[in-house]
Length: 167
Image (tube, rainbow, N blue to C red; front, side, top):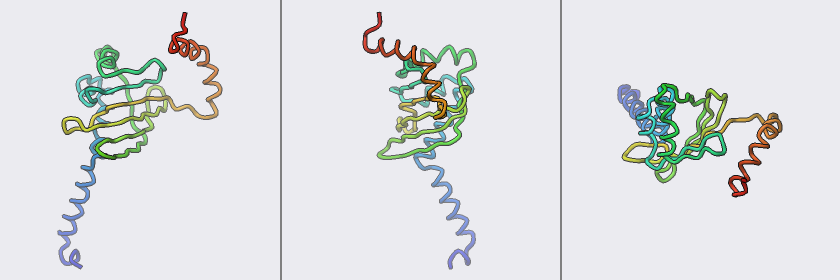
């Protein structure tokens, strides 16, 4: 076998395969998603928003939280200026790539306990950026009934508002 005769060739081939695996679209997107989370932890406003597309959307845990990029910047700016935004660390992530779009879901360690993030990343100016992100609080199935009771009144008011029935 050629690799027995030339062990350095084997090492070279292995290093190429490892380097290629680290430069896959999903690996590059994951690196940017980690950097996006880290920028929030560091209250680095410019880096955080540079890792979102210009048309990016963030959907928060409250039913009223659906922000397009400018509105999300405006909402977030005071938190970043105060030096304390939010801190999300990915515990588990699944990423999928098709036709230049990556979608993902991840379990996060946050100040709210375990949450789930899901979203879409697009290639913008040669860099993978968050185009749409949805944050949700993970609720154990056996606690859902108690949670539903806690939010019942607020949900009822919000539904009326959305339907234009608020007085």
